Length: 146
Image 1: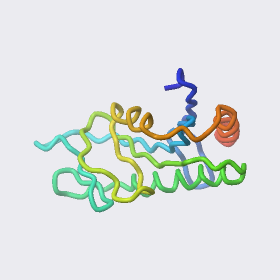
Image 2: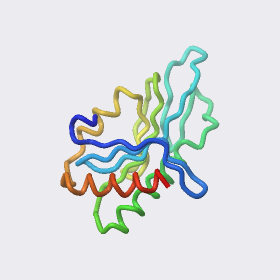
Image 3: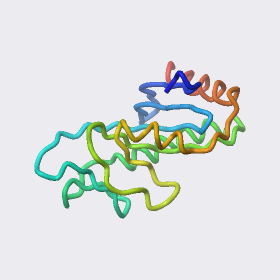
């Protein structure tokens, strides 16, 4: 996605938290929590309903949604301190799985696979200038390199 002016920062460590990836784009900042889940059983889907993740009918023992919310909150603090009104979205990325379901609230994290993520980002409205993208990226990268 970087060829479109998007910028990616990997593995940001803070005090008591880490963020796997952050994508900064004219459409906003996306705090991405990546989860790898081994496939087993007959149901090849992760179900996202009632603000929970399920594998078949059993809740996943993962705090991925909480982590994505917290990661988005940390990125939002950075953009707020900068005085830039950037849309910030938490994302749980689960490679290789079909994800059944959608967030119930606009502030809930997206739960997607690697193929769906670029399509969902592309549907968002552009609300940041390229200069905003660069400033946000530089500030977050500064924190990632400390």
